[in-house]
Length: 386
Image: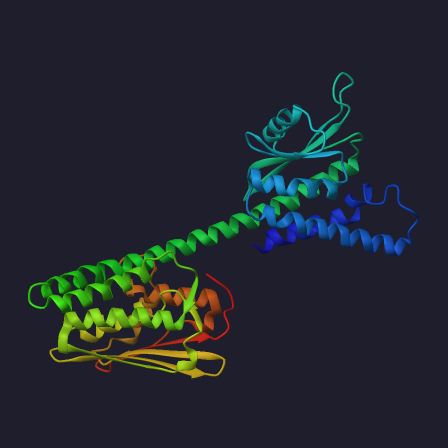
């Protein structure tokens, strides 16, 4: 991403030096040289800023239509067109049917191409440059003008590089969204095999002996599923996340009966704090799995949420058999998408580090025979989204 940003900035710097000088000052009264340069710089940056949001959406008809007029003003040429690899997406000014012909020639060459005006045809010459994303040509930017100079070729080439930089950033944004969606799907997939079957089996066991209890549990299961399987935003509130945990614990208590005890201690002032979606339930599920494993007697899970000034501090603790600290470390290092990888611990740890920084990963305190405690810190101010 840093390389893409640097290329975009260098391209824009070149444009400030030449491109805008072609149009904004024509027909205007004399302006002091220093003021002229300042105004030109501001205008170029302003026009680029107006074109950038559309280009950050990727290359399609809608984004090209929104950006092309600003690019024409930025270049100061008679017309500008944007094409994909097989179609004209948008143009501004008197373009001709030669747009696709020029685009195909540019795509075939893979480098900027100059097309002089023809005596027997349009009197506008053209400069066409390829638009690339991650080294792949995805379209063409073509500028049309009565005079095709070497300076215009350089300027259109730099604008093309800047446009390519914006499209590269759009692809990075899209890749990040896809990665986050994949992580969320992986997290939800981890919930299903470890919980849904057992919950439904438990509910079914009450249908004949205690129909009212079965109905209550079914409603709890519906509430949990509605929350966990919804089309989630990146963040939710701590209050909603704790409600999800509460429903989950009620269902697990129905399954284990008196073998499972749980308690929740929450400072009310932290309930509105934004937290990553589904960051607590996997920790509780892990506590139940390891806390109940191999126990002949009851097990207890404790959830404590404290107000710690600029942060909310969360601990999920069980009094089970514990584990070797090295085993806990391996659980956090596992691939979050791999089935059975710590029931979401690695997923939660990765997401916390991505959002807040490495200092906000999970802290696991455990030892054989000493239970397990997982600590989670959440800043009260949302820094970014996954």
